Length: 252
Image (cartoon, rainbow, N blue to C red; front, top):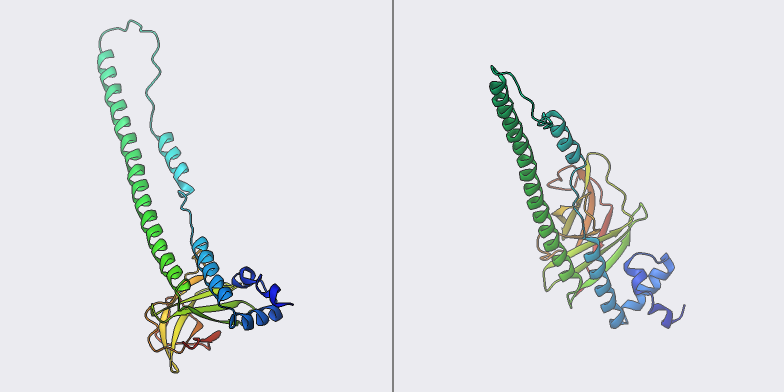
């Protein structure tokens, strides 16, 4: 592989698509090629932004609920040619039917009003989630695109690839993975800062997240690295299992 070939591998490197030998050669090339290092940061930022896009759909049960409501409401009888009716009760029956039709209309209006209120709350919740996701995405992109951003990579025992990007200027770090399997039932992946051998909680990885780029919670501070463990759902105050991976932060 020539030096010219190495310049073309930035995209494949960001997407963890290189073979181990190619990856090692490219990482050695990065140390001596600032343009490639900058391109890797920009591509990683773009990949994180694309991965954070999510769509919110109405629940499948909504249509069934509306149709079930309609089926239980009595409809107004069809109006045919007016016929002469004997006096004595016809007017009363008509008034009773009118009251029933009015009650049915009110019930239907209440039902659809409830659906409309539910839709409004769902839309508000969706907007809130989208705004929160956008804020997280912007924070991730800011770290990945920071001028002082530095990265370190490692392979997990499962074969998944992992990368940590650190910006001392922003005092933040981002963890990226590719091919990480789902955590066992009742367990969750937890991130940690390594403060000189003392592990400090840095948040949980959301199993439902669309992106594999995670902003570590809290400041980098004096941490020399980070780790990833499997913990009981909800996380732990201290690691309860051996780290799946330990990554040392690159020197400034």
